[in-house]
Length: 279
Image (cartoon, rainbow, N blue to C red; front, top):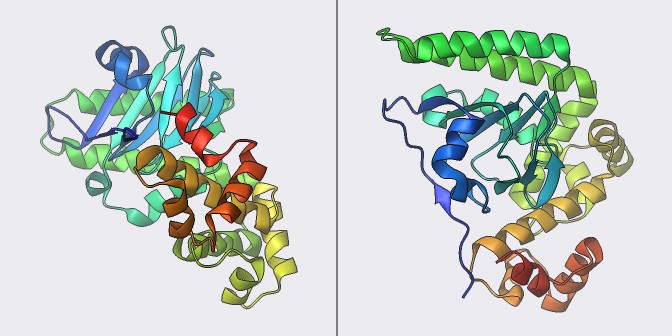
């Protein structure tokens, strides 16, 4: 029987559902947990200030670089490697703490297939200032500490959203089409895997939808659909006891053999071997 990926609950002595900590501190307390694949029922901003180690997010390895901010949602599987000398800060919070689902979705949904952004020197200086202000409030005894922390967190998320928009040049109709496309995939991918279906949902042509996706994430619409299906398959293979055949039907494949071929073409390994490799 396959062991499920652990999902950690938010723990904070001050019951804020918000925590500011450091990479070194969390490594000292939870080294064993950090080095195995896991999920969390909260959101995380991991800000790295040196270039040491690796961060695995949804089965893909990213070398940590100075100035990286990783955005980890409550759906993603992640873990670390070789972070004994890694430096940086971590902000953890729950959706009930911030109570701004729109902003959270805008920031963290965009990060599903690109979980980090890179800050230049000027941006890093500004981010360091925000972190220092948060630290000052976090360790204080202010009666409205929670409300102040919420405002600073919103500023950080808005800055990240703005940075993403500037980087990807998203202030246009193509980005709005891409966001709608991504939401439609999330709601319909098990039964619908053709680009034409998603184009029709927006009353645009497949060519127009493909252009919107290509300009936003440099992939075709079909590639994006396939990657979403593969990611969902990986999560089920790792985090459930469903057989490969059951996963095939769960994801809308007519035959398990079609799912196996689809998965193997994308990953160069069968679903069964993938599960064994990630036990």
